[in-house]
Length: 155
Image (cartoon, rainbow, N blue to C red; front, side, top):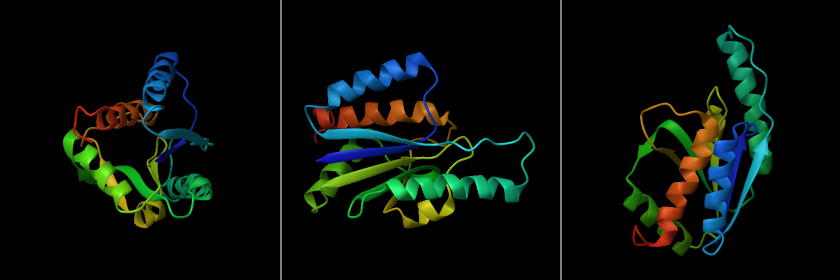
């Protein structure tokens, strides 16, 4: 089992990096996991809708270039499907049992995720209707993956 996380931007806060490293270490016995970062576009203060779409497109094209063919792609999007931790663990198990060897989770930048990425994903997943900083979503995702693999949610 291999899990890829493709995320826009670099982590700037040490406490988030520490948490990410903590969960990466805990996940390594269960799966091969890697995080790939793509460059975040600089956004001016008062963006027009056209400027926002252009930024999302540029970031999205970078993301697409990192997705491996044959990987099951899950985009994290606030408007995606909400599931609890138990169903998340069952979903991961079912995905790998169905023949996929790799899963790719995509986390957009501060402006969100390009629509084309969401349309091409196998699943758009929401962890909450609340808005979280995109950098923090990496840590939240890793924690949920650990819960899924650790057996607390019966994976």
